[in-house]
Length: 410
Ligand SMILES: Nc1ncnc2c1ncn2[C@@H]1O[C@H](COP(=O)(O)OP(=O)(O)OP(=O)(O)O)[C@@H](O)[C@H]1O
Ligand SMILES: O=C(O)[C@@H](O)C(=O)CO
Image 1 (cartoon, rainbow, N blue to C red):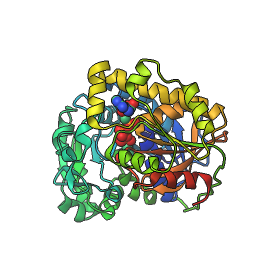
Image 2: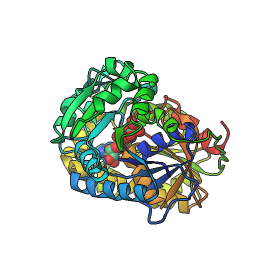
Image 3: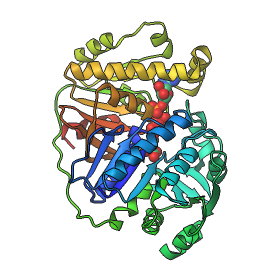
C-alpha cells in the first residue's frame, strides 16, 4: 500500500475511494480499522471511520489507530479526508485530529483543502463556497450535527487548534508547484488553508504535496495524488446484483430532501419521525415486512425540514434524536440483508455509518461512479451492493440512478 486515507465518515471514504480508483490506484475501502493486514495488491487503502461528530479525544484515538495500521501496510503518505463542507464544530474534529496525525507522522506543515469543484465546493480567499453561496448561506448552517455558520475556513480552523493557520492564496496555487512548495516549506507547526477553484488547482496542490507526510482535504485533493506514485491505470470490473432493493435516507440536507421528493412521486415510501422511534411506534421487523411486500424498490426516510429537526431535538435532545434514527437504520439494514435484500442505497454520512455497521461490512470494493463523489460498492464476501451518498451529492433523480448502477443496468 502506498497511499493511506483516514476518512471521518463512510460516504466521505467512498467519495475519495472513487477519486483514487478513477486515478488508477487499486483501492479498497475498509469499514473501521482492519484487524488484519491488507491484500498485498492494494495501492490505496481508505479507512472509513465514524469520527466526524465524536468527542475530539475519541476521534483522535481512532484516527491514530487507523494511521498506525496504514503506516504498517507501507503507506508513504496519509490523507485525512474531511467533508467538502468542512463539517466540524469549535471543539473539532478537523484541527485536533489533523494536529495529532501530524505529530504522529512527524509533519510540521499541513496542507488543508476541502475543495471539490465538480460538486460546487470551491475555496477562494480562504472562504468556502457551495456553488454560488458562501458555506454559511448554503443550507449547511442548518445541519443537525455540525451547523456551519462561518465561511472563513482560516477562522474556523484556528478555533479548533493551537497550530498556526496560514493561507495559500489562489495566486500562489496558480503560480505553480514550486510556489506552493515554497509556501509550505519550513513553516513550523502550521496548517495552510489552500484556495482551489478548479480541478487544475487541486492537481497542482496534489503535486506540490508529494513530500508531505499528511494532507487534510476533501476528495478533490486526491485528484493530483495518484500521479505522485508509480501506478498503472486499470479498468474497474463491476457486476451488479439484481434482487430486492431499498433506499434508506437519514440525511436532512437540501439535495437529499429534493431526491426524496422526486423518488416518492413514483416509488412506495415510508417516513419515520423521531417521535415514532422514541415512542416505539415503529420497529425494524415491521419495516422489513413492508419492504418485502413492495413490487418496486421502496424508500424509508427520516429526512426532514430544519424546523422538524429542531422540534425533535428540543423535545428529545440533539444526540438522542440523531442516535435514535441511526440505531433504527442500523438495525433495519441488518434485518434487510438477513431477509435477502441485495441492493441498499443510503443517503447521509452518519446514516451510512449506521448501515455499514448494521450489515457488518468489513471491506468494500469500489465500482463505477453513480454520481460525482458516489461510487457503487460491493461488500466483500457478501451478496450485497451499496451506494453511500453524501448528504448534498447527486442530482434530483439520484436514487433511481443508483439503483440502476447497483443492478448493473447503467
Ligand atoms: N427527522 C430527524 N430529526 C432529527 N435528526 C434526524 C432526523 N433524520 C435524521 N436525523 C439525523 O441527522 C443526521 C444526518 O446526518 P447524515 O450524516 O446522515 O446526513 P448528512 O449530514 O446530510 O450527510 P453528510 O454527512 O454526508 O453530508 C443523522 O445523525 C440522523 O440520524
Ligand atoms: O466531501 C464530501 O462532501 C463528502 O465526501 C462527505 O464527506 C460528506 O459526508
